[in-house]
Length: 382
Image (cartoon, rainbow, N blue to C red; front, side):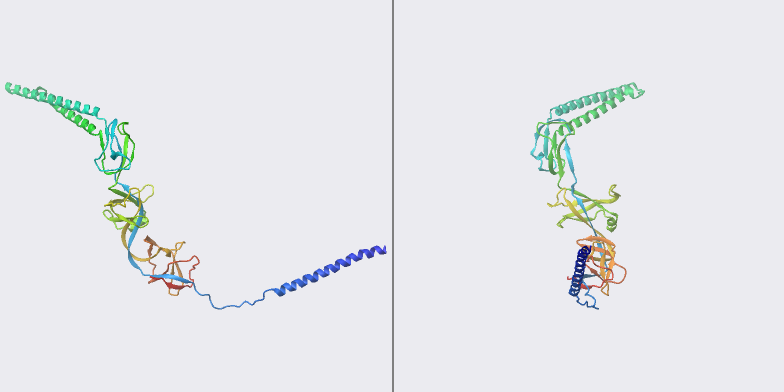
């Protein structure tokens, strides 16, 4: 029994020794790490960091003539499908009727078989001759009837005794026959289809030998001499114009700024578009040049009324959040929510803030700007 207690005590002493040794090693490691920590002193600085540099533009309140711009599509004044006015077989297609051709007003396009229409004209001419003969007979009957009553010395009892109703019917028959002859001649003339106005043939729908019916499309013709535009403006832009606008002119340019010409306001503003609720202005192009093409999307610029107490600055002065940042006399930032009148040619025109000017405007505002922040303003060059 005594030997067994001795064997049990030996492992217990070894475990205690290992625990003591591990504790000593852990304590030594902690002392080593603590001694290796960076013990650099932090120096307090009482001076403020330098103020950030801000590029500013000094602007003064002034009177500005408003500019209103909008985009519109150039459309030909006349643009139509030319349709057959009579039925028949096409016996000739002129070169002017081919797609892509430019034609002058009155140029021949198609010829339709004429036989039945020439026959109709001849029949109408015969009807006119017969009606004239009937009229001559009626007039002669009236003359004879008057003569008989004059020889007898009596008064005719009514118009029927003088054959006057027959005379009036004969006169109406002559007028009707002449009208039918004119209609037959018009149909015969319609067998020759010609261009009603100058322009380009954009497409052809009929071919040689084809039998067409009345009203069937033949070609599509688009005017190339007279152009129109319809501009839509919101109420705010409409208020910037100098009224009345009828007869005034607007400038036309490509989206890249290339000048195309001018357009005259024919009429506008009398009603609102039922979908957009905007006012519509109708213009016609003045002396269109080679750069004017139907279907082109152009910029239309109007000269508006004079507006007082405005500030003009680059569009870059407007931050993404919609604010304009100004620098006061103490070089502190002021945040202003601008009342924008219009934009034109990269410039922004806003209502001048209350108070004496001039104003220094930050032309490149940063997202980090804060109201009351001190900055180092630098005047913009130029």
